[in-house]
Image (cartoon, rainbow, N blue to C red):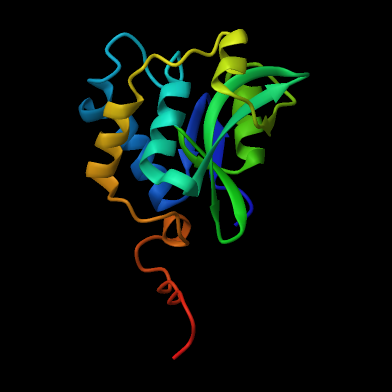
Length: 168
């Protein structure tokens, strides 16, 4: 599966079960109660990305969609089946999905995921509103703390994960 989202008519449609579930949860009262004055795509992107990092720990890294050195949008990068994927308030997508979304919906073509610090993000107007702890707790309560897996792409009936550790 090359793309995990379809962007059309001003909307993002997730093509994976986890992407749909994550996006729906981000729009739920359980999450929006923590951000009463903004959502995750209009000021809360960094807080959500930091919440995903706290929720998943070393399984996630902070990234930003950037164009010409200018940070535009915070996301959490996770690796599933060897592929870097990106989580934000719209769900789970590839780098191409993220770039297309920003080009078509935010009028910001040519973005690529880059690493940067929270301080660097602040210099570009992307601010941490301090709500990531509560958001991380809500994510863990809803999704548990299992690391990203093929089930995120193919659903709960995906082949079981191979056991970790040495073979018997």
